[in-house]
Amino acid sequence: MFFSSTDSEKKGKEVKSNLYYFAENQMLDCNQYIIKDPNTGDLALFDAGNGISLKGLFKGMEKFNLNPSNITKVFLTHEHVDHVLGLYPLMKLSKSNPIEIFAYGETAEILTGGDESRIFPGNFGMNPKMFGVEIIPLEVTDLINIKEIKISSEYKFQIYYTPGHSLGSISYYDSDKKILIPGDLVFTGGSFGRYDFPGGSLNTLINSIKYVNNLDVEYLLPGHMGISDKGNQQIAFSYKMIQSISFF
Image 1 (cartoon, one colour):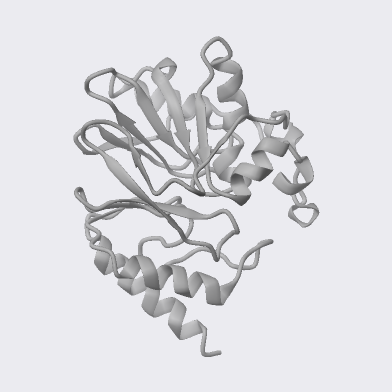
Image 2: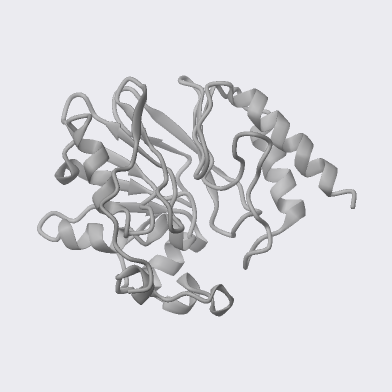
């Protein structure tokens, strides 16, 4: 295995009632978010990470009395390896009671097909063995015709297609709680997603950031770097920065 397995705990924080943030580990990982249903104890996970950091996520969850075996659903923001590879060890662990996977369009198609070449494009210089996973076809619910998902009695997210970083990129937005989970669309500190990967587009990314810039966002929970409770301010900063580079 090229990347050595790590048990390093993913640092966590309760952002709002029953909504938890777990920071990305090193080695091409991503931030992850968990919502607990206070009535059933079921857990919904946003993004699966790189697989190597799964034990670290579980360790982080223990601090908040969150049982990994209660993960019943995984909602993906897009198809890149650092967000989807954790699905494969997760599905092995939940064989007796399989976790439901939700993704949009291109992401759902790639995972359902189990096409390794689309998960690991040749120009990435990576392969599944580096992460200790085996790519297999997965059963995935495509969100392309679903406008809204209800996670629990507390959280309800609208689904917005926000490509530019990738073809399968979506953002989850709770208008009541003013929460945005945008994947790698936009980050804190004026940053935004790369657009030089397969399926990426600068102009499309600008339009997607413009769209979320018009939402009422307090909590910005991106795929990388830190989170913010000044969401609109952070998104506006990123929109300003990406507009500035588009003139060159």
